[in-house]
Image (cartoon, rainbow, N blue to C red; front, side, top):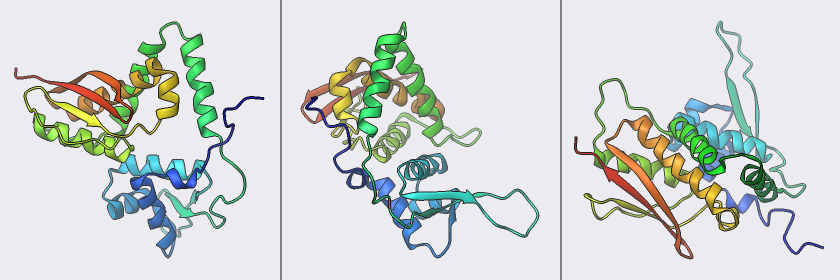
Length: 227
């Protein structure tokens, strides 16, 4: 019999700060909330708020339905905390992540390239796109990148060298999977950062990610363009 756990140890305790804030808003609201309302109340970008809401729905902590309205116009999707708080049953998302990661690693002809491409697409989705003609400089781009990484649970530290910026990532939200399949998971994270910076149109690019230089530390190496 396998010694590896087939269920997650404690799914509800590992929500992360941003997702916990979203859930708290749903719990305390007098009525179901729309994505825009949750984003405004938690100071998150709309796409980030939607990402957390969809995950809360997937884990059974929230419910999603079409708003009942009598006014003309397209009804919106609204969210509310689940009455049962997903208290029944175990979750096995770590097992699912492992299965999907091994599928990518073993079946795709270029798994690292596929992971980077997927990460870039998600990075563009999660980034808060600048308004037309808004100029995002290197410092602001790194700040915004760090904010998205913090929302995703990477616990980024401060960047000390502006000329050769490196973001220390103090926590990997996919640590167990990444330790087994670095080439796929860490490539996904690198692509995520590249996609965020591309969407921000900042003169910064993510060049490489050094995983686990210490047990709880990865280093994201950035390059600033001066052209």
